[in-house]
Image 1 (spheres, helix red, strand yellow):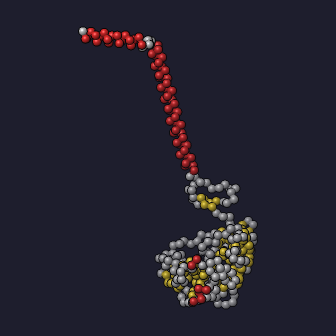
Image 2 (spheres, one colour; image 1 turned 90 degrees about the vertical axis):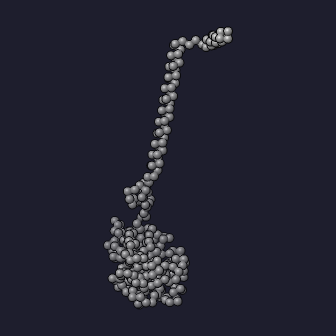
Image 3 (cartoon, one colour; image 1 turned 120 degrees about the vertical axis):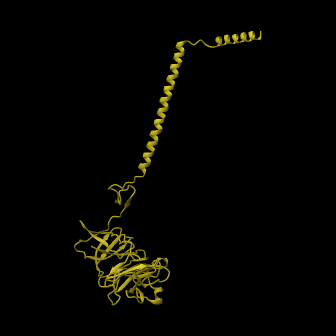
Length: 326
């Protein structure tokens, strides 16, 4: 009886489902399948488009990043010409226009002295006797080796000064800078820049520390018997000294020695003239004591052939002094 009741209940339930469910024909079923297939195709295409757009965006972004690292020199119309120092797109350096000299190249001597005033960008060329031979304009960089001459180069309308590459810093002698040679003598700054030495198979010191500071460079005279050496004291205050190659007493280029050295004016040694006079600049007291006649001088250590090459106008027009050669 219970089995019969259960069967009747299931039959009534099934008849109710047939009443509530719509009658779907075969064509409707095919239509629904077609719509589902079309929807899936549209969705697949849309997803593919999205993927393509994302990939293109990533590639473009990477291309822009690569392109942003490639620096190129300014065009030829730029006011500051540039020179690439290597094939690398990042190795681009700028250089200043060469200072122009208003004079006939052939009429100038083989070498001389250049005095540059940075405030006005005016440079003046002198021969080795202190006679003015030409003037020019342009920014000049003499560098940290004023004894190493700039190169005078012929122009279509005169000449210009070009920087020369200083010698290698390799000296061949332990703990010494590159030796400078003159008159068959080599000298160098050695031992943590505390000694000036004559260089042979080893270094022979001829001058030691002059107080707090360091030796900057040393240049032998044309006959090799003397050495002009540059000392930088406290506050980088410069003092030029002269000492015999054989050793012995040391004095400043302005004549002070012993205990008087501390009261010497600022001075910088630039080099030597062929006849053995020291080319020096006497300072106007930028950090130390001012000289009696600030400016560029030729100083005769053995006589009275001193020459004031160019005086400083005032302390605001400081001179930079170097050498030049053809």
